[in-house]
Length: 329
Image (cartoon, rainbow, N blue to C red; front, side, top):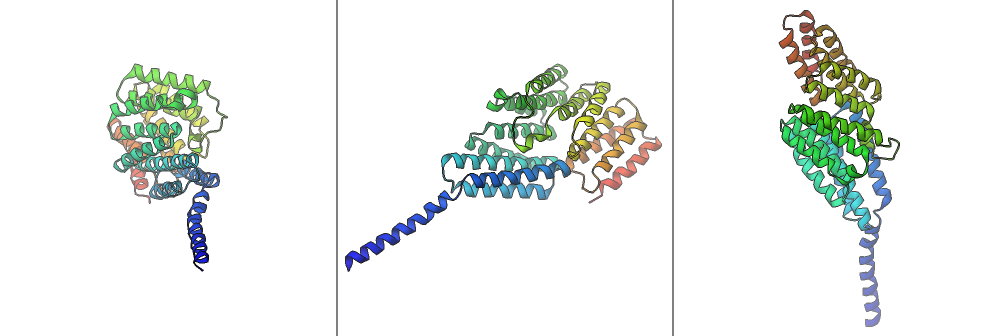
């Protein structure tokens, strides 16, 4: 009797141990694939609408799920891949906060994303975080830090290995230099961005968040750099080329490039054309609230407009529409 009880007890213990082992092995590649498909949906939402609360919350929920599953990963490789997914979800949440001009919140999220990218040993996720950190620093007015973050992105393993990512990092560095008024470093970095992109294979498989970047987007960034260093004519030409190259479904990016085009026209004192161009930004974003970063850019445009032509009828009319659109939910 004692022997039978011992065997029954042993069998029960074994079963109890086996359950969590089975649960551990239930997390694998299919979970990683499913979570990554969720990222693809968020990237599409960002391309159309831009940063907003719902996008950030969905991204953070995805990061949380990835980290919960990471604890049950079947292997070290699966656990690292889940850390990688969590890093990109967290960067996506940070980007939504940046685009919505909630920069204080974005900084903590990017610190977290860099930690997760390090745990994943994922240099692509690391580059994404540094690239966004440079953008965040720019919007916070920390322009020297923006340059340093651009160089940190250039130093990642993926930027050294793949010219596509190197181009993105050089472009971000060029923007940072131009904001500081450093003309030669800005143009040098811009040249490096174009040289690297010319070497890149744009058909290679890459994460969905990189889909925005290509010749059209680099032309849009070129326009910003050229305008910042005092070359509005060249900037306008680049803006027109950018709008011909940015895909239609990147509605937010097209609206930003259009606003930048209006700025270049205004900086050439072509007030009527600039106001007509700037008005199309509202049409492009029709049906969606205007993200904070775009509102800020339009605010910069309006300040330049009233400084240049405070009494012009077209300026007053544009200002009326700007105020009406600003209040649009």
